[in-house]
Length: 261
Image (cartoon, rainbow, N blue to C red; front, side, top):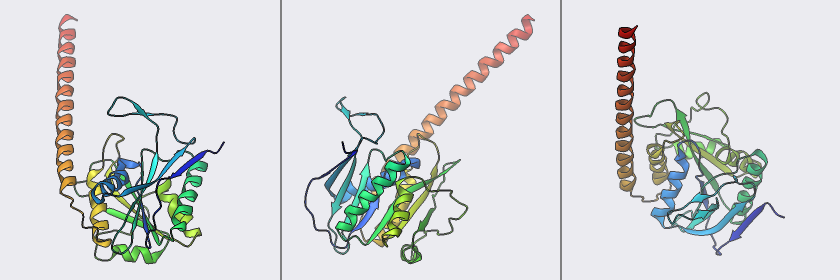
């Protein structure tokens, strides 16, 4: 039995395509960015990818039914370089399946005569950044110069991050073996497992919008940032109130104990 089920949904003939990967990771920065691209550009799904190496779990959907985890590849025709957008619920969790997955994606990309790859991710910080910086690394200096020009992209990443784990990093290394230029854009975000790095995703989208001439309207994302920030402030306030109440109760008990003793 094959461990991989890759289903082609429609035939396309991309023109010098660029692959943009955004699978779940730190702050889900890459996932938020690519999901936004798919929605705003109205990209068409061309591949379903399923594997028995994916996490052994299902998701409960809005209809209170279950969905198996999946990864999908989307296509969008553009004036210059067409786009292939890699999105999904999860990414492979172990070393072997992560390598296998990246090789299969690169096989598909090369079949379309792909030109370059952009992977998106986050850099986890102890505190939420007010204005996240976006760092980059690549398998080729030329592609760094291309995306750094006229943007605030920071290529001084050595010492800022350790190993880049998972598809976001592996695609760069494996693409180099095939002589495909690839770059990773990594935005600062809060390194909390429940935090959504929408601000970081927005900074990455600003760079992509400018360099790839996507004509995106980022107003929707701004609205989501405000909603999530206000919710986060509310929760922090509630937690602070509860903490104060607990502290007051402990202090009261202590006083009672001292008095009785």
